[in-house]
Amino acid sequence: MKYFGWIFLFFIMLYILPLNNRPILSDTEIRHWETTCEMFAGDAILPVYGGEVQFHKMPMANWLTIGSYKLFGINRFSNRLPGALAIGITALLVALMIQQTMRDEKLAALSATVCLSFSLALFLSNSDQTMAIFTMFVSGASGALFLATQEQKINRRKFFMIIVSGLFTAAAFLTAGSYAFLLPAAAIILFVISESRIKELFFIAPFYLFFSLLPIVPWAITVESVYPGYWQEFVSFSNFTATLGTAANWYAYPAVLLIGFFPVIILLPTVIMAGRESWSRLMRQPLCRFALIAMITAAVAVTALRNAPLGMIFAVFPALSLLISMGIQAYFNNGGHHRSFNWMLNVWGLFLVISGIIEVICWYMSDNILAGYAETLPITPLFLINLGITSLLGGGILLYSLRGNWRSRLYLYFFSIAILPLAISWCFNSEAKIQDPNLRRIFCNENQTEVVKSE
Image (cartoon, rainbow, N blue to C red; front, top):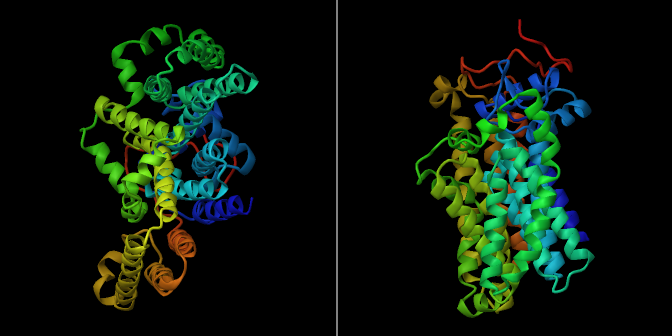
């Protein structure tokens, strides 16, 4: 359990403590905030924005935020809390997958920490709660389906996992639409086919669909009674694609995937250097095979169809964190010489030290070289010096630990990731907001708990 205490501490440092201090710079976050406030003030069946019902949007993320409003009032913290908790629960689900199949607590903790360290996870927790919550539900649905397939006999555990998967899928559908069925179903179908266990589908599929649709039907009936003809419009092709998102160039999704991979990409050479023999052994693990199939399926589905929000590519990352953590463990269990691992961590530490020096110099010379930009940036004058000192501290400790064992260096690497956003979180201008005349800000006030209606 001590390793899960580490996960909790890492999550609190990286996601919860800085939550209220970050400025509002994303129009997605503002729209989510305003839509939720309108639903809070009136009709909560479907998202409402500017007094108009958003028929192509799903309400689950707004419902969770409304619950947060009721607990903590209308403010930045309560608006972002559901997204941050969704990332934390996603990491916990990844850990539970390993704990339930491989019974390896250390590997479970490592996989959860890797999942929390992706820059895309940090961004979504702040700016796109819908995609963070959707990934949480899809991960739960896929994981529960996988655990159901691991039960060789029909028993209560197998049936329970199918029920859990169906409920997760229903929640994912109410968050972001039809991809909730596509991603888990495609992954488990390909996995079962690859395992030559097609008969398994004939038992799982009916119960899975039943328990997926069971929570959706009451909401669907309510929507149809309030807005007659809604489902006829929903199943039409034009509205179906609108529900999933707006079209994007195919290369936008790999670009977001690559950027969101930072800084965990530093560990990728270690994973690759585990060797063919180690990966051959890993691929004998059903969980590893399923993670690979789920990762490829999500990446292809989101990229090829090109009508999903860019943030939906985050559905790839839970499976990716499983594979990375397994590769790291295999590298060291196979007698890895630590060269690639130490070399990449030294590169990261050196990067932090150099960037820290530059940031301190820029702060010292800020009156000369940054005077023209200071007023336009959403940061306080202490931002650069704080970021510089923190970078020097994280990078310096990492370089100093060169002779330490690999596990302590790995912890220090994650420590260097966590302290940066935590240290600079209070150096933002709390009043900074994105300036967009098309965005409406009259429905809620973060300084009071009541909703202000439009005139």
